[in-house]
Length: 105
Image (cartoon, rainbow, N blue to C red; front, side):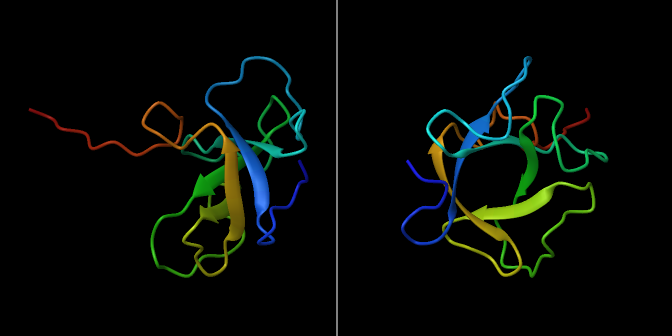
């Protein structure tokens, strides 16, 4: 597999909670990414993967999120974000960086 998908987006492998060094690129050639966990994280996760913020709204974004991670979007793509195609993993509820409502009784 190539780093870029046929539509020009970047193929990514979403890592849910890496505890050992993985590096920036997966064995299949895609880019390893970790969903931003909030607070300032910078560009690179300690495991070597890239920190990313998955954007799901029609707002215009800059390439970097305020926490230092890269702003990305998967289809549909949003202005200012890096276009990505997920080849492995997901930005589901078990992925760090997912947003959950907090209910305080």
